[in-house]
Image (tube, rainbow, N blue to C red; front, side):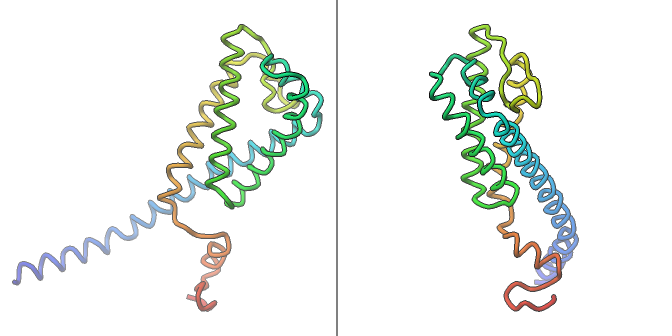
Length: 186
């Protein structure tokens, strides 16, 4: 009986000691996750804005892949940047994150497939990733970048299950030291 009580007391002490470490790990996890999500969001926002500046140029960059007719390229030149902009906003504000990550991953897979197709056919084209703002002659660099972005998207996708479910309002309240349910300071 005394051994059980002693073991129980030791477990309680060990649990107390590990709590600050667990909280630190959770904080580090949150910071890394928010940094990755914000970086991906800013990249999509930047890509969208640079393409929307000159949709005709972006349509030509899409057509250079020689995968789609010009009319489809022209439609995509307006639709894709708008979608990228919405994805960027969704990711930066943490709203509809699951859907945004699915769309982001899907777009990256499609873009990566188009780049692989261009490489396989020996095309030396500007990838069109950032409109005319950044020259991307050659396709290997953008291919590597897309693969890294796919890894980031995958990490965000799989880590969302371990991420604490907390809305922006709850985060703001906790930073202010307020209890959500009562509105009082904690």
